[in-house]
Structure formats: C-alpha cells, structure tokens
Length: 123
Image 1 (cartoon, rainbow, N blue to C red):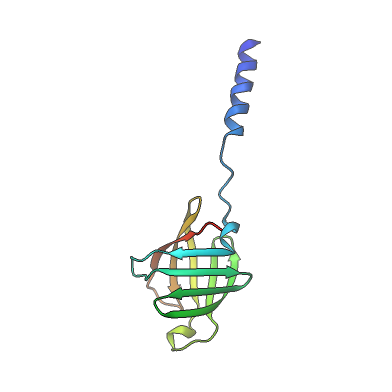
Image 2 (image 1 turned 180 degrees about the vertical axis):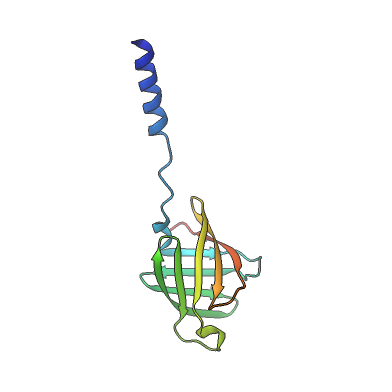
C-alpha cells in the first residue's frame, strides 16, 4: 500500500511540474523582432488584430494579417510600392519555443522559401 501511495504522489508531482503546452495563439498579437541575419534586416513587428506594422532600416510597412490556423498565416501589403509588394506572403510556423518561433515564408506562388525566426518581446 505504501508503494502505491508513493507512486501516486510521484506521478502527481511530475504532472504538476510540467510546463504549460506551447500555445501559438500568444504570437497573434504583441511586439516582436526578427533578428538581423539569414537574409533579414533587424525588423520590429507590432501585431494587433488583423494588422501588422513592420519597422526596418528607414522603412515602415503596414500589412494585413490573416490567420488560416495556429501555424499558417498570410501577409498582404496594404499600400504596395512595387509589383512584388502586391504578392501575398505565405508564412508557415515550423517550430515553437517559449518566446519565439521559426518560420518559412513564400512570396506569391514562388518556389523560393525564406527561413527565419521571430522573437516575442516582453511587454
């Protein structure tokens, strides 16, 4: 009987100490950064509702963001300045950490996949 009680106590402790599941919803709003490197300039992103504002170099772009599910979304430039800006950017989240995620981005119907990381800034 002591063994059963110890096993139950051990299992209770183990399950109560587990981290909460990594919920991708926390990336749908807030302030984020894409670090410089891997083909990206340092970019600050502010997301709220269906709007995303990106600040990099001396530019500020405003995009609409449409979530298909927790792991896929599409960005569309609100005021495109060139033909390539008119194409939607399809984003797939490929790996989630506690405050960041890795992604793959495809512009329009291109076969070129750009990989990167987005980090959520503490608020």
